[in-house]
Amino acid sequence: MQRRIKQFAIIAAGEGRRLSEEGVAQPKALVCLNGEPLLSRLVRIFQACDAERIVIIVNDLNPLAAQHVRHLMAQPGGEVIRLVVQTTPSSMHSFFALAEHLTDAPFCLTTVDTVFTEQDFKAYLDYFAQSTADGVMAVTDYIDDEKPLYVATTDDLSITGFLDTPADCRYISGGIYGLTAPALSTLRRCMAEGQSRMRNYQRGLITDGLRLKAFPFSKILDVDHASDIEKAEAFLLSEKEVLS
Image 1: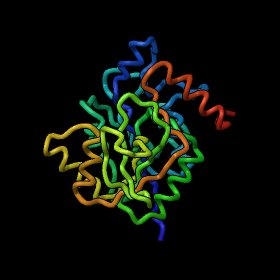
Image 2: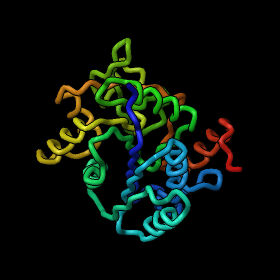
Image 3: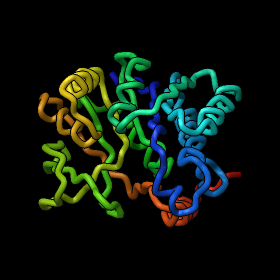
């Protein structure tokens, strides 16, 4: 029996300091790729996957992101969106703030600046729905990150570790996490121990014995710098993802 993946969560609480320092005026969540804000694009993709709940966290430092989410909530289909406004010290803390709005059903979590093709995402979601693993992590062999998190895998793409150095790893983490209820127990443990950063949380999943699988995407990009915007736009255009 397949899982039903109907819950999605978006971490959009970062300050986007590097983008701001490089002259990008908008909050990171509202940076446009080929005319569509990053946040809107993710919501659209999740809605196309029959989302029944999309939980979004934004910080309280810039009201524009929250205003944008409320605008999306007022649109057709927007009733599935939940908004959390909170400034947090790390992505893992943002995830913890989102967790209280997630049920024990499987869910998919991503950061707002993660750029991928809809085709890859749908294939990933189908794989997650059919998998018996406790979690399915998106990975890519496209490395264009200042501090990538390397993912150690076996021949069948079972994940054995998350590393700061390559160590003969082919893939890096893509920032898309398909998770089940046991993963929330690990999150609570990590928070209680004062840990931070999503990479430490992922290591915690391994420590707790969760069975994790890697699912390769053709390419995943992060929008951290102004130059990344042009790269991401060109990538999506090359995949014929142009707004109609």
